[in-house]
Image 1 (tube, helix red, strand yellow):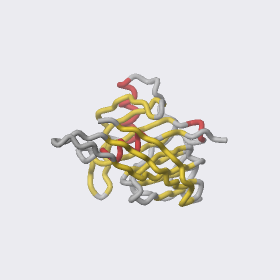
Image 2 (cartoon, rainbow, N blue to C red):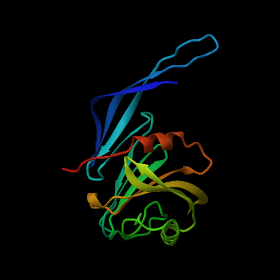
Image 3 (cartoon, rainbow, N blue to C red):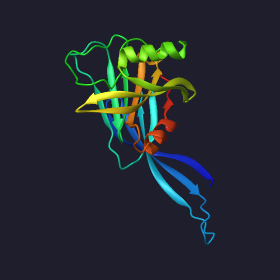
Image 4 (cartoon, rainbow, N blue to C red):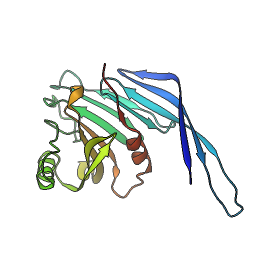
Length: 203
């Protein structure tokens, strides 16, 4: 199967805070060899979200809505989050602290995670901050060092959530934590969004 992707920006269609949604035409030629040797080609439209303050850009299914939240004056420090298709991107500054209880743990507290630590030390650091963590792997996201793991989250019910953690100090935030579906659920959209993630240069 051969895929050729060509991205053509059409313009901004949605603006929320410092973020915007841009629709892009993704021409996806897919060669499918069936029993009768047919070649099938399909075209798809993807939406692209850009957030200049968070310094991120990613594509996502156009049928999904994007939710952007910036925490209020009740909190200390900075926290911003974007959620789409069950995937949340949450950035926090090193000094972030809740002014009121927000009920869960979909962000990483404190300083940027130190990826120079040994695997054992990283597991200890993650566990101290997030609780039960397993299956920690070192990965690359847009050529940046990152961690992918599964963590236990209790919010209405207990789930094991697939998570990616990326230190992100140059944006004024300490970490970007990306949370996806529960382990064992369909990971297709999460992986596609993660694969499309790029870090934008900040002017």
